[in-house]
Length: 215
Image (cartoon, rainbow, N blue to C red; front, side, top):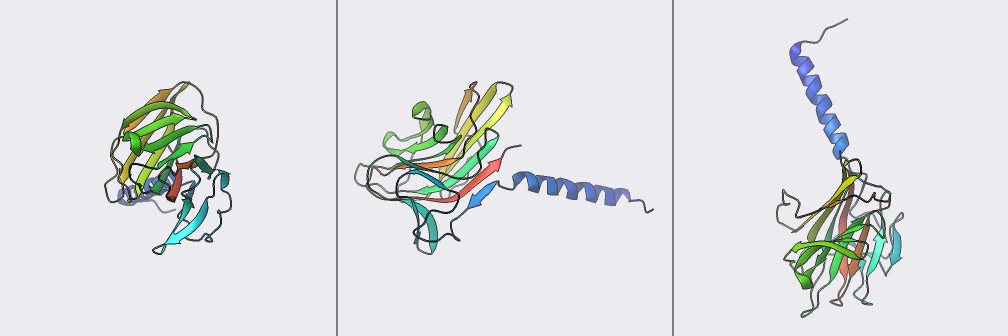
């Protein structure tokens, strides 16, 4: 039986650590719609309301919500999870005069926590269902993709924290969470979601969806 030298033992340990880190960061769900058929809703997505469909422009595919009618619409995707989950997406919208779209990503199903960009209020807001929990200033850039990231983690028995951040395409992801909210009500398991209100009368596009487990 061969014995491993200290150097080989160290190399093996580093490799094992690297594979463990890779497994931890592998997303539970991910799509950029490039394999989806234009004009359809990808299998596994559940449209709550609205005319969502895959569209293509400039060689890029995305899920699009039409600019009419003017209401709030949503679609669910990915696995149903209770906590220790992060959801990410890129969203594109435009303004018409002083009319702006609003859009959000969510966890825990249709009535769960939503991280919402509200350009008319110049705010990044956190909702629980339709109830506003918290808001921080945020300057949305129309006609530019916006990244959204929402996380829900269990911090101890009977305590959870919801965190969110947003940034424009081409900018570096903020190191710190921009919005954080502590809760004691146990969350219900549910699927992540996308929500949009095309108040500007122009379509809202969603792309690069990712659902990850938090360690």
